[in-house]
Image 1 (cartoon, helix red, strand yellow):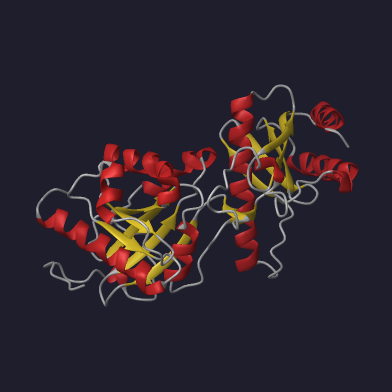
Image 2: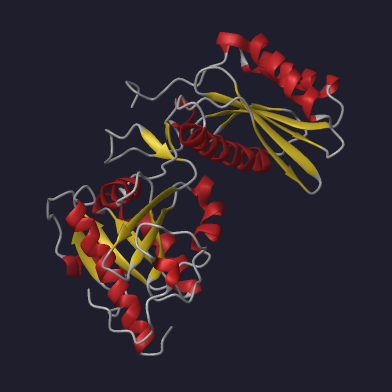
Length: 132
Length: 208
């Protein structure tokens, strides 16, 4: 799956999710892979770093207080003026979505997981092992 | 290290049971930031010295970073910190250090503000193969007036005279500079003790 298709899928997610403003796919080490057009380059870079940090801390919370497997279904932050949702999206990648504070969290989460299934195994951020 | 301060031990620093948030005026409980460039050994230091299971936020590096995260000199590195490391070490019956290791890359620098909040001091780790990577950390600590020591992480191989490192960094003579091996608990602990002494000296001299 190429980046154009991926971006098109992200735009589709915004269209069918009321309140969704931006969507971005990032690598687990905090770099943007692709994002919707309303998100500027600088904001995209920033969101990628934030989302990687949040996911990593959520993983630590899961290790400490969850079933010990470290799995994270979803990380979410509710701040004044909006919400941030992050889910795992394929190997080594995460999907982050920013919405207005009027969005329905249940619907956002549902649509994000649906999209991840759609993208499926095509979406990967391969490790650098063997390429350095 | 000997406790030479006149205050009685604070109840918030009972060894092994940290419960209260750290007052930033406490002389026994110190929040310490470990900073420095990408791949210099910050996570390694927190991990080797912590007496509790450290919180680490290391993620596998992906090919997305191939053009961005420069691995020259640290080719064996395959993970990187994306939020922060956290560890704790008790120096003596009254001194507990809480360690916060910062992420090294520029894209995570926005996290440093929060990590520095309430910190009484910082360790700057340097690697002489990539000396310029620590300039940002030193500039920032100097600008905000946070006491710090500089530790040359040489992984057990002394390759440069410390005075050469000092002049290359244009480091103020009052800033302690030492060698360390971040993998060695004793060596990393020595750096922290040196920092605690440095902070105490500054406090005693009324410069903090």
